[in-house]
Image (cartoon, rainbow, N blue to C red):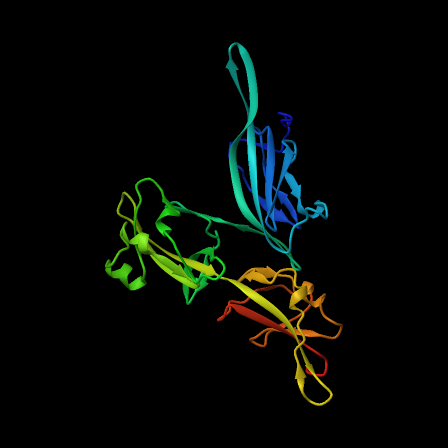
Length: 314
């Protein structure tokens, strides 16, 4: 049902505006043109669609049922606005709700609360779907980040960055594999070269130089960060009465034995599997404290082991 036309909270336009997330509640400006909205969620691989009345400009993630509630970590959302459009067919007027704009983002749910993360980078020259909107620093340089998950058992994948970047009218660009090549305009990645390009586990940096119709130059640094799917183990670490050590395994009770590097994880789910009095450490001696938020580390191997130390070890 469309909102009342004299509703003072309505705004003009056909694009979603001012999407924000506060305390788990999504807000946006209500459009005069809207007939309805929909919120499409992907939670732990399961897809859910919620249809929303045009009179509302909010969606409360904290009120989802237990069966559909957000998973710890990343949850993918797509908000769409519809307009009711009509046409006349053989003298009869028929109408339907037609999508006119949408916005995709990640809702991160952690112990620290909710965060909205944009997954499209856009400025006056370029647009990159699937890139984080927030610029990040890497070795003292600013980069646009794209994440790529590698298939289990692989360390690289073919990747054509040029197909993911759209340029504004009148803007041309050249791609390079090093900052030095860009500065000296040498070894640009040509059209054919993209068919042989691969990205590997870890950071893969590209350097872009754009030029507009006035000849103005602008540089972009893009990092494609590849995460592997790795196996995790959860082992006890106890000192026996005779001074020897034992490593009982709790891995069979893990919700999933395979995880993606860099993903958020709920360390509380690991503590729930352990006897009372255990403390979890990582291979790099990092202490994982109950109630804190962490991401799976990038492993030098295909397996990462958590150790649950008993009180007589610490």
